[in-house]
Each structure stands twice: as C-alpha cells, then as structure tokens.
Length: 456
Image (cartoon, rainbow, N blue to C red; front, top):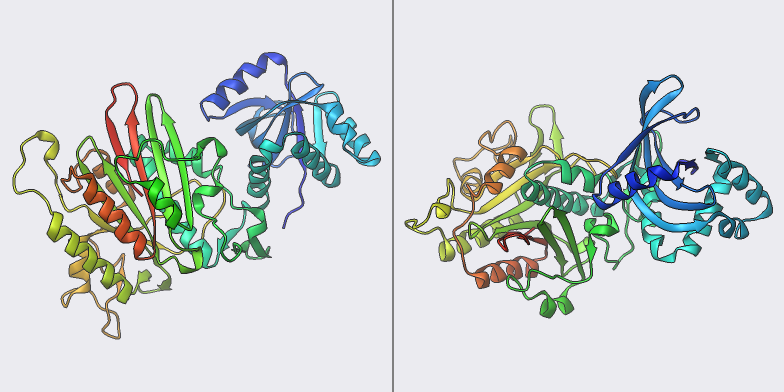
C-alpha cells in the first residue's frame, strides 16, 4: 500500500467563486500552479485555503502538463466543503512535532505535508467535521488504491453493479460524461481491501461477512438519499425494505431532470447470484431488463468466453415465461409505441477484468437479446471443443455494443410496450426472490412533469 501524504494550497479570495460553482455543478476547476514535487497525472488529496487562516475544502487534484515557465495545469475535483475550519483549531489537535511541520506547510502559498503530519492532520479534520468523515475516508481510499485492480468474489458482484449503473447513467444523460464524473469519484471502504500485490498492482476486495457493501455505497455522498422519493408508483420499496439485506438510493441531476436509482438485494455478496438492470422509460411506456454475466475464462483462440450453466438456463426460462404473459402488442396506436425490438430482455456478458477505483470506462462486453440467447443455447448455437455451449465475441457476432445499446434505449427504439406498473413490480420481486441484486432507476423532468424510469 502506498504511503499517504498531501498538499495545502492557498488561493486568493477571488477564486472562491470558481470553487463554489464547480462544487454546485459537480464539475472540476483548474488553475496553473508551481508544483515541483508532484508527478504528472499523479492524483493527490489537497486542502484548499482562501484566507490562510482556515481550511475551506478538501478535494482531489491531478497535475497536468506544463503551461508556462515552472507552472503546470492542475485540475481540482470531487470537492468536499469543510465550512472553513480554523487552522488554529487543527493545530491544537496535533502533537508538538507535527504541529510545527503543519505550520510550515500551511504558511505562505502552502506546500507538501509529509506522511505522519498528514495522517494526524486528516484525523484532526475528521474530529472537527464528523459529518464529512465518510467523504474524507472515500478520498483517502481512492488515492490509496486507485492503481490496484480489485479481484475476488465481492469484486465480481461490484463489477456487474458498476456496469449496470454506468449503462443507466449513459442512457439518462445521452452521453458518457455523467458516468465518468461519478465513476472517477468511486472507491470502496479502505478496510475492505486486502492482500496488496505491488508487483502486479492487484488487491483483493473482501467485505466483512454479513456486511451490506455494494457499489453504490462507494460513490460521492452528494448523490446518496435516505429513501426513494419518486418510485412509489413503480414499486413499494417501503413495504419491501424489511425483507432486504441491502438497499441504497441515489439521485443524479442534469438541469431540471432527475434520475433516481434504487439498489436492492435480499442476500449478502457471498450469496448474490447476479445483477439485473431494469430500465423503465415512462415516456415510451417501456422497460428493458439486462442481466449481467461474467466471462471468467480466457484462451488464445476465443479470447474471453462464457460457459452457460443451469442458472442461466433457469433465468432464460423465467424471461421466456414472462415474455409469453406480457409480450409486445400486436399493433401500435401512437408514434411512441413503435419499437425496432419490443422484447425488452437482454443479457450483457462482461469480461472479468476486475474493478478499479477512479476508472471512468465501461468494459466492452456483449449485449445479447433474449431471442438471440435462446438461439445460442440451442442445438444450432456455437459449441466448444467438448461439445458444450460456449459464447464468445468470435463465435456470437450478432451482439450489441455498449454505445449501440445505450442509444437504442435512450431513444426508445428497444423495450417492451408496457403501461402496467404491477407488471414491473412482479418482475422486480421475481428477480429479487431468485437471489439477484436489482437496480431500479427513475427519471423525472421537473420542468414539464414528464417522467422516464431507469431500473437497474
């Protein structure tokens, strides 16, 4: 595990407005600074002071390329407001030796703070701002483990949850920028990361048995809510909550539009069989369900591949039965009812490459329709050398890419024709009871009261 250290940077008071605007819009702020002991692209935790007598923000910062003599572009992001902690209050909580080092680092234009002083400084700040402990710990975790690829059974579930959330954010925003902003601020609880291998830059994600960790619990607190506010017509989460092992609610904003995402799981991570994304779009009265599967095997001939098992066959049968009961309508009566594909059921096969804090990208996987999956599992589908079903990028070419899937769902080109909320409730409950983790996301436009729903 790398050693911890950080920086204090002083800005003129006139820069405060730039930080406030960046914080409000969940965006970044950049400036040209002299940074001698800071490597390019290196991520640091930084304390920001505007007056020299207070610490006003703690945030992440990354050094970019040189833009002037002895100056480089530095980007500040993931801003956490500290409500102007007095520097003297921090000093009173430090030991004599660390106090002197902190005073030297915090004077003038600021500077680097060595490891021991930095650890004590962060502990003092957490004592003075206990309501921000979770956010400060998230920043520490992010900087500490960002270079490690996280593996293990828990990481495999987190990877599927991450892919589901990323797809929902892309569909909601119509681009990848919101997803990138959310993902680069994600980190797990540092106490849940073990077995660091610096040579291979790998570590194991190992939550405590019976704990309630899930991917959404590691995103910025600005998105976290206590209860579902806009999904009560879609599913009765209040009554269901008592039966759940884990539940989390997050919201994301773009102008007048709000996306609410609910995560629900009746099992702990060790017993979670998979992850489902149910995207419900109320504007088009359609839903799309995506079930995530990991491609754990790899060889030179096929690359990453997936071997279907009995669990997959049960889930395909459940989808087939649901589609037979609530399938697409025979004819359409409005423009919005038109679909290129009115099925609504998909699988996404995801290469199991582990999960990494601060990584912004989705993994390039294979979206497969229910109908295509039935073919792949049938007698005419692709087979491995031993004659069993085997699915890979090479032998199953009619898959849909990440970008294609997001565009199709965003525009309402694919998805079931379904106006009945009780049908969706049955679907959500069915997969929860089958041992799946489910995310459900709902979009509302407060300007015109029109709604879309994302269920993942």
